[in-house]
Length: 114
Image 1 (cartoon, rainbow, N blue to C red):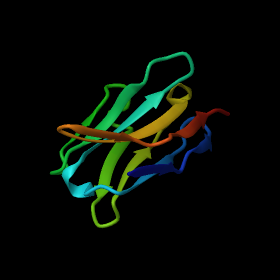
Image 2: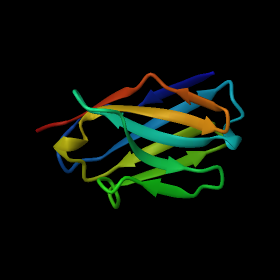
Image 3: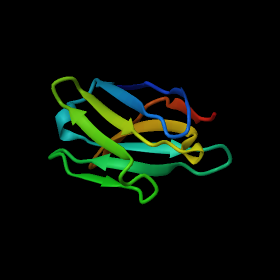
């Protein structure tokens, strides 16, 4: 099983970034998908969730700014990050989950700075 995140990088405050997570080795459509973030010195936090039937949920800190989506044909989940803030700086991880199984990617760094 592999989850490979991409799309991270340096972005200015107020800018946008789209993260991708490509999955292989799992039947992608039966897994819920999460994006987590972990800032230096802090615990990993749940950012957004999308279920197998495309229901979504967001942390209060990103509501209205971030959008999670999935393309089951491409085995990929996305995180569209708009109006980013310096406090969004973190390593972002994707996570595939279902009863009895969970898998993690290696993470992608997002740095918001002017």
